[in-house]
Image 1 (spheres, rainbow, N blue to C red):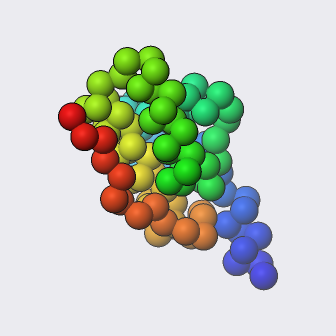
Image 2: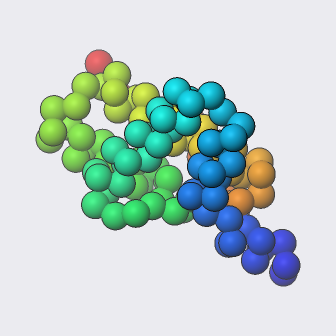
Amino acid sequence: NSRLSKKTEKSLTHLMSIYKNEKKPNTYSIYQYSITAYERALNKSIIFSDISHSSITKAISKWKTEGLSPTSMNTYIRHLGILKNDAYKRDYCSTPLDRTLTIKE
């Protein structure tokens, strides 16, 4: 039970604060930009559970209406997947993201 409460205490903001020290500045910035683009597409602040196939599909629909390139969409999705799966490895969330979503050119 205490393990679950630890998971719920950890947030995307917390992981990004760790990344600020662990990652190179450009890597940190790219992850932050992907989060921001995703939040804009979903029109809300996100938590780890928002990085899911259903929410990614919603974001893709929004990005397509904005004329975002498939390459940019794939980049955002790839970075969000890396964040979610790293959060899972660190025990910050209960499920990883299956990496099967890609946008066709």
